[in-house]
Length: 429
Image (tube, rainbow, N blue to C red; front, side):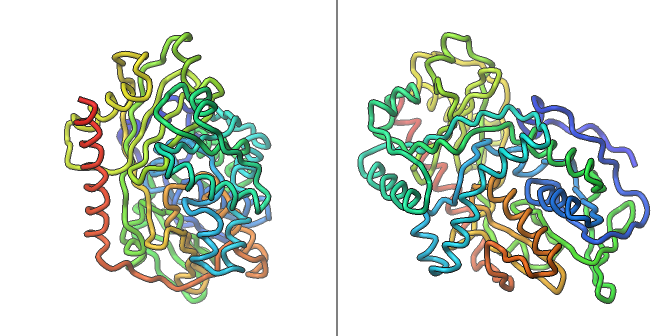
């Protein structure tokens, strides 16, 4: 089966090392565990399952990292959008602290996997900065820092002067600095996971969209255009790019869009004035903005939300104005790349771990935190399967709960964020 070359899905797609060979499925195979989705979750699960002795097949509809894993900002953070105390409020004491503990380990697991498997992904284990645009947000971040440090984290609140020194911009009043976090080229990381999984014995098939899932006695049969996979267990690891393969699953989430623009590499003198410590940064506004440098010195800015903009005119203006506001000394920039991806949000802002049927697991709704949580949850599902259910999971298993007014909610939030960004542009002139 041959396919036409695909356009790069992001800057990361162009700059990461090439993907390993993952030919489309041709024929019928059997295995212990079939995994649908070749992103962080699916490939982390595959790698850890294979290391535990399981026979695993991964099916990816297009190419490895095509979805959020190859499109995100590449910030390796611990935890969720909620701070740990809020997670406890949502899930209860025992379940909340179990999830807090698992996701606090996210950056450590990611960087350990990168080191152990020699993954080339522009890793910068230099921390991240969560930025406050005003004093009210400084207070919010201080509360978050306290909740994290109570549970063993080593994050630090920075005052305005320290924030300016770390970022190179005077746009923020303070920041939460997490030294355990960092940045990566996310496509490089997911391709590295695929390469490590293949080396461990996993069969990875790109260009192999799953078209149906059917039970066959106690086993599951996943069909693709080129063949079928019959497995004892099944993991659906499609998150924001979940379609209609499993009826009703995509109704668990509402999609939020995140767009990014990358400049051409900046000169060495300019690079020294922007995030000189190579941290990643994002702010605490509801319509958040992120910025970072890649290894080549490209300045990458991103924003949440979208309005109809077929020619990228509005988003390009937003990116230009963001750089003008944050780093006016940079002046006009030339753009290297622009891209967009989807984020899977849940109404309670925590991921949902579901047993869709006996032998079928999924985790959906990372709410913008995919790298660490996806890696953690993939490993957790693998360990649970290898132990025949005896290994605890970070979340309690529960049945699906379709989201009411999914489309309305998604459009409202995305358009609302877009209107906010238009307001920013108008204020900047």
